[in-house]
Image (tube, rainbow, N blue to C red; front, side, top):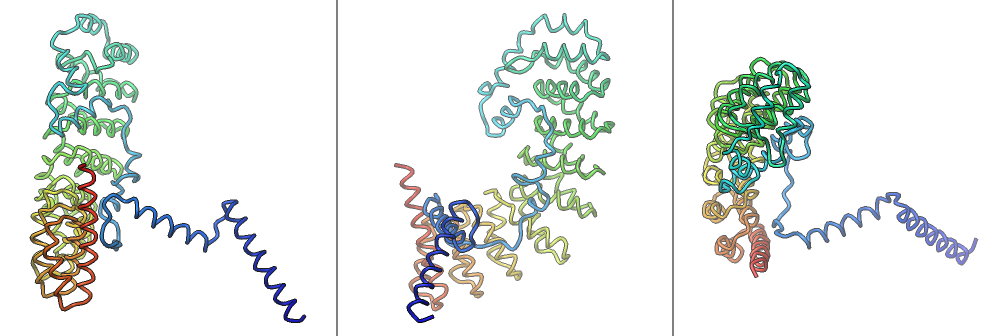
Amino acid sequence: MNWTERTFLALVLLVGAGVILVTLGALGVPVPFLADRANERADESDGAREDVPPPVLRPEEDEGLLAELEGGPGGRMRGLEAPGVAPSVERAAAADSAGAPPGETEAGEVAAGEKTRDPLVDQLKAKVDPKDPGQVLGFLMAMTTPKGTKLSEEDLEFLFAALGEHEDYGVRNLLLMHLERVGGEQVTQGVLKFLEDEKNPAAIQRALATLRVQNDDAAVNGLVAYMENAKNRRLREAAFQNLLRTRNGSATDALLDLLDHTQDRSLKRYALAAASQLGGEAGAQAVLGFAGSSDPFERSIGMKGLKDIRSAEAVPALTAAASGGSDNYLRSQAMRALGRIRDPGAIDGVSLVAASDPNRGLRNEAIRTLGSIGYADALPTLREIAGNDSSAYLRRSAEKAIVSIERQEARRAARKR
């Protein structure tokens, strides 16, 4: 075979290979080289569309404590959600926690409408045998309205008596739904009493969801207590998940007390994860205390807990931890947490580390954190570093952070127009 024939054969093979690759791609068969290039283009496109891009991608060594406990979005915990929680009650609880004025929610309208009691309620209730599940179910369905329930505190004795009489989940679910819509301290105390003796896991999960909807001090502390005392892991997880969803800081003292006295490692994980979400500055202090512990287990869960903190209330504690101390790894993780929170209140403390800390690695972490926070207050420090620092590495890092902050400020300005 002469060189002309060899060249022709090589061209034919190349063209054939190209046709095969294009055909496989069109059919949806993964081709490593083409898939990598497609992913790169998608990443570039996503980066161009990102609203407020971080200056530097910093991969985490592992996930936070919430992900480990599967309590985060999309985790196994969603399977524990008890069905039947009244949607209008959930919305009302969310509105109350956000400070919505009374009467602006559906539940508020129901409460306003209950000033005049429908005489039909007492007429029907007088004919219902609390021990007959069919009669109870029919009565409850008759009391259900688009805005909630016609029942009130006058009916709580009947509702709890019926709740204790029946094992049928459907009846219990509807009873608890009405209790949620009535609400109040008596409901919370009654549900807590119900949980003391109940053995059915499905009914327990449903009652824990009712405490979440109640969301008063007694309810959130009751969730902490149930989480502590539960022997069944799934029920402990259910109490933990419902506690997280209350977003109620009233549980902080109970959680901190639990962390102080429990020797159960599993329970410590749950309590610390909950404190990181609900405890504000006190919760952040607890997480930092564990992260700085000499005990390997406590240090491990503390470092993981730092990855879960997102509250601006934690900024003072995290800034103090980032600004000083002998544990450089803890300081760097505290700065990363501040970068995720992105609160401008951390800029002064982090800027001081970026400008003058003797450890170059911590200075670089502080520069990156300033870029992640993304506000113009950090630019003077970063420009000084970018223009005059003796380390070329830190100068480049500061330049990247400056570019990121300028882009974020420009996008904020554009959104205000």
